[in-house]
Amino acid sequence: MSGDNTKRLPRWWSGGVCAALAVTFTHPLDLVKVQLQTQSTKDRQSVGVIIKNIYQRAGFLGFYNGISASWFRQLTYTTARFALYETGKNYVDAENVSTKMGLATFAGLFGGMVGVPGDVVTVRLQNDSKLPPESRPTNTFLTAFFAFTKRRAYLACSGELYQPFHAQFC
Image 1 (cartoon, rainbow, N blue to C red):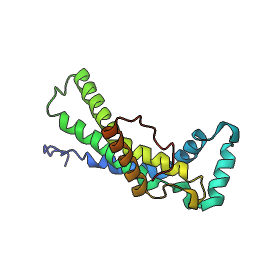
Image 2 (cartoon, rainbow, N blue to C red; image 1 turned 180 degrees about the vertical axis):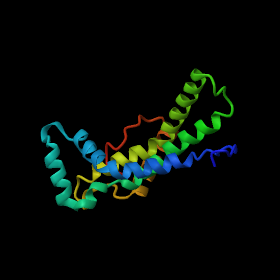
Image 3 (cartoon, rainbow, N blue to C red; image 1 turned 90 degrees about the vertical axis):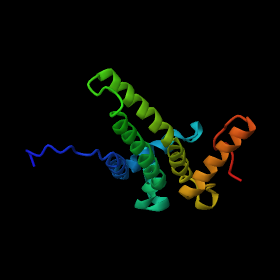
Image 4 (cartoon, rainbow, N blue to C red; image 1 turned 45 degrees about the horizontal axis):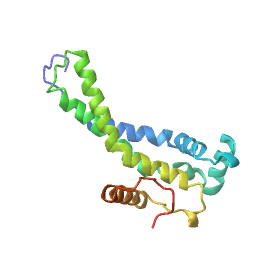
């Protein structure tokens, strides 16, 4: 195979799959981070207390609250970024570093915009996991995603200020 001059086709989709696998291992850390960041100033808890509370409420699987939204975000964000960059290399001067940097910046920006809904839903599900199950406004990826898109559509047609998640969903 070393003497084979055939051109290898890009596998841009593998970036999204690998990112989804990676987030499977890092998601518990992200969950703790989100819960630390969304604490009220009067009820501050340490990392140890947060970890203990997650485990007491839901066991080991509690550390994976919101994982479906994290997978969605990685599959959309990373796959879009890799696909756009791989495709774009055919249309720019691949020898020019600044051109490739511009393409990478554009691909990253576009991927970031594609990944925002998944990121917002991930944080929402991770933050809601602090609440008792009967008090959670969202408990599944689809519920949170449709609530997010409904609020975005409302903003676009009404001109109202966008204040995500300041009140319970309808």
